[in-house]
Structure formats: structure tokens, C-alpha cells
Amino acid sequence: MTYQNVPEKRVELSPGGYARERRGQWIGGWSYVVRYNDHVVGDSGSVRSKSEYRMELMGAVNGLKSLTGQCEVELFTGCEYLSDGARRLLRQRGSDPFVSGVHAGTIKNCDLWKEFELLLQVHHVEIRWVPFRTKKLDSREARAAAQRASYHLSDPVSRSSSPGIVEAPRG
View 1 (cartoon, rainbow, N blue to C red):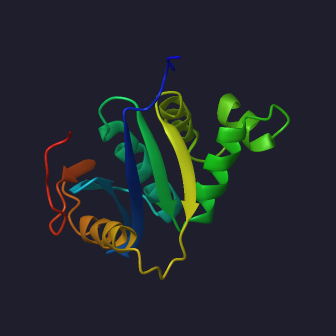
View 2 (view 1 turned 180 degrees about the vertical axis):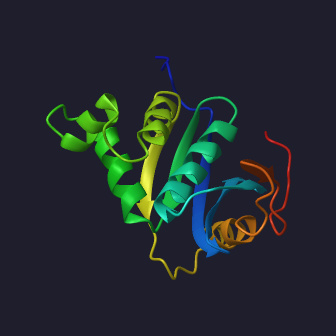
């Protein structure tokens, strides 16, 4: 018996988000760390935003977009906004006002939630809650990378590989 749509690899994804005010302007940093076996990759960037929720969601979306092929993803987050929204999209109950709001474009960050929902059609995602002050190093590194990224806004969208994250080839 053969199975269709079986993910080819299992990865761990830890997104991070951070927002701060600097000289009257809000700057947000996002990042992610992806672990696949012994390989660890990550990326980070910054945008004008005062919402850490948006930044954490942006880290998750960019992390999912970075994956090649179909993957089984364990998404580790300490952000209730991301964890709750993702679980509600995974359940897809038509009567859920959040899901209806995503589809209607009436909720905050609906652009990112719609992108997240499309990525759920590619990858099998499981949400794993981790406390904010976790000992899970990837989650701590993702948060620290997002904080570092928030200090490097040079254009409307700034992206750079985050120092401290080991770059490895995708496999």
C-alpha cells in the first residue's frame, strides 16, 4: 500500500518576534530557526511594526516558506496568539469567527494568516507550546535573533542571516 502526500522529512521550526520603539518609530524583528537532523538554518529580518504578534507570525510564515518539499513540521512557540490562531486554522471549523475573519480579511494580520493557511496545505504542521522562559535553545535563539534584527532596519523590509545561527545546506 502506498501513501500519497506523505511528508518527506520531519523538521522543527522555532519562530521569534520582537518589537521596540526607537526615536519615536516602532521597529519589529522576526526570525526563525529550522532544525532538520543535524542541520540548523535560520533567517531574520526587520520591518516597521509595533506588534510582536505580527513579528512572531512573520517568523513562522518565513520559516515555513524556507522549507523545500513537503515536510512534517513541529512548530514550537510560546506565543499564544500564534499557537491559538494556528490551531484554529488547522481545525477549519466554518463557525469559528477567527477562521471566518481570515477568509473575509477582517482580522488583524489577515495577510500573514492567509499565507500561513496556504502553507498548511503544503506542510503537515503540529503546534507545540513552549513556555516563554523555555530551556529550548532554538526558541531562545529565535527570540534573540528577532531582537537583534530589530536594531538593523535600513529599508522598509530588511533581511539578513542572523549571526549565531549555524548555516547548513538544506537536505
